[in-house]
Image (cartoon, rainbow, N blue to C red; front, side, top):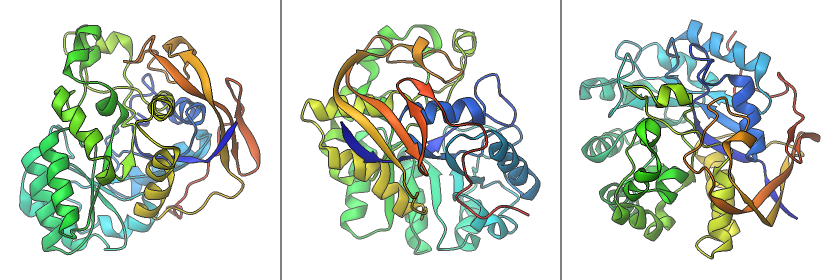
Length: 354
């Protein structure tokens, strides 16, 4: 057995409020614990989106009743809340800015709106950006203009990681995350994902993009699942929504890469614990750890998962390394395939909204 710290996923979609048939705080945090994650940071693009005091309070109230692991909730940067959002900064995981490939009330098309959020959001609190390609370059420039750090979500392409590398080498305050599905899948794998099963944002990239991520691993701060569950019926529909479930497959995939010599255990710990905790200024969880069998050989099957999505793009894939037990604040919350953590045991890692 090996012992890891309780892992942190800084990018999950719990789908509550508004789409609990896909996932809710109870099922999503069951999946988190089964995957070795004791902290999740939830995205704000729910229905309604989390953009103000009532919506943040509502999301956190739902989490307090149902979450089985610890959590924090992002606040969404909208076109009308640049002045009001900062008052909620201390109660949130950070500010999430949607600048590319996103639709609805959180899409920020006007760069002057970006400027307002950068100017007003407290400098000590994180800003995370959904930005790709040229939008990513623009938000890195914006962060430089306002002399504050920015965290780039789900980097997937060579041009993006090369630019981030150059920015880091120049001392710019930028960090980034990569999702396991962009590390372990590329466009060549779409043939095995028929219909809408391959729909994800950012899209699965070319093999050379995938290789560039591995070649620039030193410049990737976090592994984040972008857990985005949808049902099989939705993925098989004429207009399939983008997104993959990922909380229960991320660590086995990373452990398999470690077994093959592509990663070290310290690479996993730094990107799934040390760096996310630092970037998002998260408190230490006392008496919390994950026990894994690094040599356990098994095949991924959606039928054995806890997420409501009931499918995985890694169906049938052989892996090496398995979560055996998870301890959260001295309590066994997962053991041998069973989630033992109860709804409401998870704690909000930010001060509550009164």
